[in-house]
Image (cartoon, rainbow, N blue to C red; front, side, top):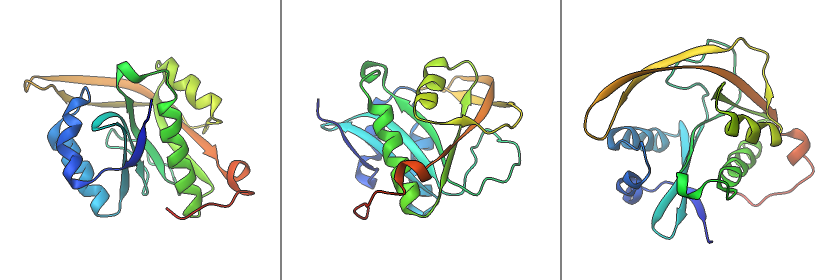
Length: 177
């Protein structure tokens, strides 16, 4: 199966509606943050169909309220693979892109937050070398608005993970992105 991973283009924002939990307003806001240089919004495409997404935030942090720790490295957030395309290596490919570009930009570490009960994600990150940063888990909360406009409160305990990129990339040369 051919999967193409690239940063989101303006003409593609409306196609993200095919991803579950995708809200038009949220995706437009994220695209505008990409346009301002604060993040890169990567999408995995199968033809014209978006099957996965991830954000690479240059300034770190997420909207759900990471505790105020010093984090002088980029962070991965909103990694999501459509259920029909899981267990095919797409999440790893998205992480590869984020990690490579982070290192190319001169950063030696990359971080992310994950729900403590999301065992498939925790296992993926552990296999890829992400380690607990040693910070206290924290409670994230927010309001989810579904496609019909219904709202529900959510809350989850998250842990912060960090990965050193130095060993993986220091001896490699790259083409510019």
